[in-house]
Length: 172
Image 1 (cartoon, rainbow, N blue to C red):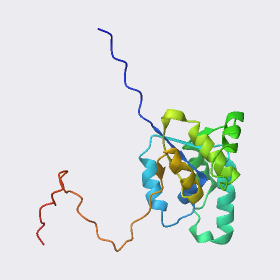
Image 2 (image 1 turned 120 degrees about the vertical axis):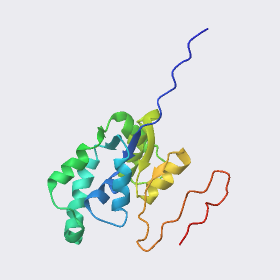
Image 3 (image 1 turned 45 degrees about the horizontal axis):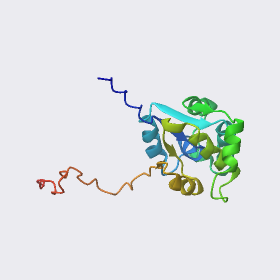
Image 4 (image 1 turned 135 degrees about the vertical axis):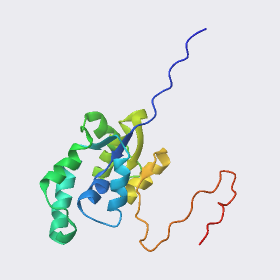
């Protein structure tokens, strides 16, 4: 009897674009949610263009709303160091040219092509960019863009059984 082939490794890499990384450095409503999400992943990746986009976006935010920007270039370097950097190869440039729909900007197309270059290891893409989300959807790529629940929202009991029965009542 032939030995069964070992199962293929599960997708393990989360590609993180600049819009998601920026929320780690410029506090917004979704910042805590994306921070929690990224901490769940052992492998992150981003494009080399993030090394240009992210510092420029932080500098722009510092001019527009300095109170929201986390201070320090050490934090910025730490954020970039937490992800594997996908180089801008000729193959990625060629793939970026083919990204549909055409309203996706050049840098976003490079992010999409960089994510797709991860192949079967790509588990999803963290992005808050609506055009990127729209372009990734028809490709079947999971988009991760967690949002923070409103503070006044009460937590609901999600312990319902799998057969659809409601959870038992709780005493007050």
